[in-house]
Image (cartoon, rainbow, N blue to C red; front, side):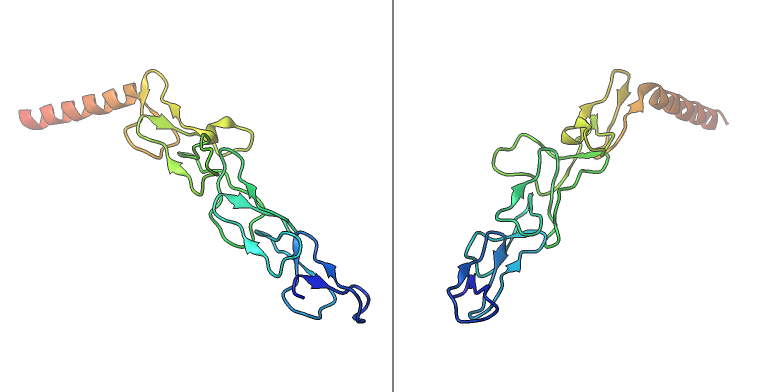
Length: 165
């Protein structure tokens, strides 16, 4: 029977069920095969199943594990952990219906500076501090209002000089 294997050197003996995280899809085999990274199998399985988006599995896993809050996973196959978002992006960490499968751009007016582990800023975007702004989405920093004012002042002066000539 598939999902079972004989462990007595191939002799006609009673077959043992494959343990969780292992599988055997052929009859008459003497061993069960370990599930690979990113796949899982409950006991007595004939094959391993790939983890869905937002989940991962180490080798020989009996189930997939949700990515921790603020992390994501979309890759299929050799997946044993979840990823952090790059600066300017975040993973919403408030969902209770599973974990995220991708990072989102921080909205305009907000930023995300880091993708370092143990830094909570990858789980959310922060508001630009007073005196700063960000008019674009997906940014890792904010711009000082003074820089914008200075740029605008220089542009106005150039226009005045052009008009005077």
